[in-house]
Amino acid sequence: MNKEELEKIKKKALEEHIPIIMDDTLEVMEKYLKEIKPKRILEIGTAVGYSAMCFTLFLEEGGKIDTIERESDRVKQAKENIKKVGVEDKINIYEGDALEILPKLEEKYDAIFIDAAKGKYPFFLEQALRLIKQTGIIFADNILYKGYVMSDYNKHKQRTAVRNLREYIKEATENPRLITEILEVGDGLAISKIK
Image (cartoon, rainbow, N blue to C red; front, side, top):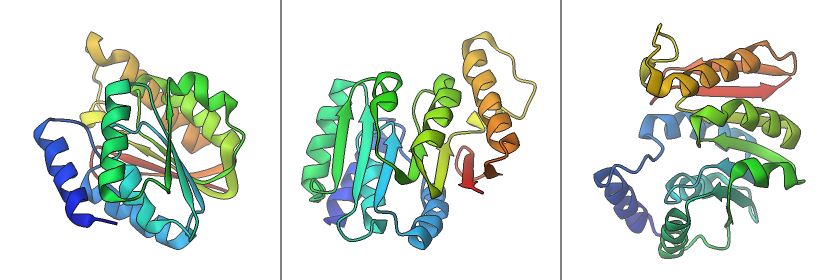
């Protein structure tokens, strides 16, 4: 892997305000991923491919990452970035809407990373529960969403996203199949392990 290129991609994404995984969030995930040595990772929300490229470092030999992105410009950019970093043999991008792609997937994954449309998190969790292996971990980024989720925030613009993120937390913490912790790293990270 070309780490120099990866750094350039990160810098460019930050300059262009493209949302990418925050360093402290990645650090926390790294601990878990090193522990489980995933063979298959599913990522919902590719953006420019930065997090998927970072995750390739923790894959078991011959492991693969499937990532889903609906914006074709981002897909194009992600493919270029993945090639530059030299990990194209480890990452497969599904182009299209996760709402349509997820129900068609049959693969079982060791880790699932949710980082896409906030308003769709409850649906993503439902699908993640279907696709995760018995020993797997589900990560959901931006779960506290600028602090709005835990406050009495009710502005119209973000109301749906906030409501659905709260629903995700409720489902993830009350589901008898899961042990979930919510960490205040980055913009909030939910980590759910299968019991």
